[in-house]
Image 1 (tube, rainbow, N blue to C red):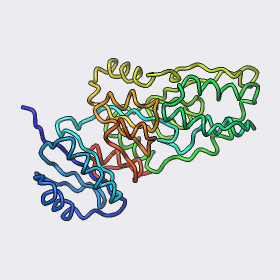
Image 2 (image 1 turned 60 degrees about the vertical axis):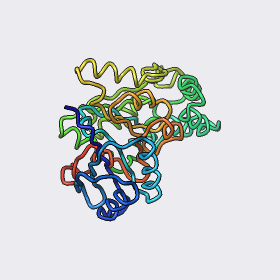
Image 3 (image 1 turned 90 degrees about the vertical axis):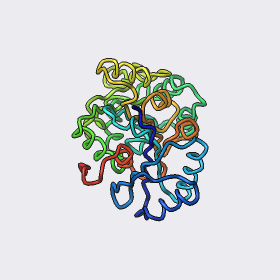
Image 4 (image 1 turned 45 degrees about the vertical axis):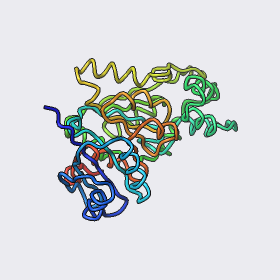
Amino acid sequence: MINKDQVLTIVGTESIAIEQISKQLVENYNINIISTKQLSNNAYDVVIPSIEQDKIKELRKVFFQQTIDCCFQSIDNREKKILLSDMDATIIENETLDDLVKISGVTANIDETSRLAMEGKIDIRTTLSLRVNFLKNKPKSLIDQVLVGIKFHPGSKTLVQTLNAKGYITSLITGGFAPISTFVGNKLGFHNIVSNEFKFENDKFTGEYIPITGEKNSKLNYLNQLTAEKNIDKSQVVAVGDGANDLGMLTNVGLGLGYHAHEIVKEQVDNQILFNDLTTILYYLGFRQEEFILD
């Protein structure tokens, strides 16, 4: 028999007064609280009967006004086995291809081009080809400078290491490029690293690349390939990203999450992380803070 109850996970930037929130749900929204579970001082699971989408949208706004991230899921569909994660602006703060072009001395407005691509206003293949072409005849050693400047988002290593310990398959899938993606993925312990690859000649960029993930729906194709290979249903996948090229995977998994995302992702993906770090994903999956493997 299918259980129609939902689990609402709330994660605050500060400690949460669960009694106050429970009272608010009951008195203001006529929602019955079946149970609550503390995940940390600032995170709780609240099990409630299934409620209509209009009420969920209203509650999201209420929580966001209180700088509380929230996630609504079917309680029967919570268990996951795979993590798919974007890299640039998700696992790390950087947009690494943009950083590389800037270090090379190009003065074009790279940030604007990247922004338009992440908002879905420019085709991903077009913008990647444009930016990679700027690197033509530049030394391969520029990559070393980019690696030195990489800043990992808080909670990134805890997220990956904890899920690895829990038996998840963890995959970093990015529209970025090896060997930068290899450095990031290995540093955090991702099982799989899937990315585009630069072409080099005589230790210089040729201005061309191998578009492994530089096509429309590349990430969705990888999702389909991995789940088929492992015989795992897509409902057992959690995916996180911030831009338009992530939408294929975010909207076809059991739990798709926008992380400090562009507007196009906020519009099409219900569950978001707006205020907290990447460990919020662990709370959304139902893990208690004591289970985290800390950085």
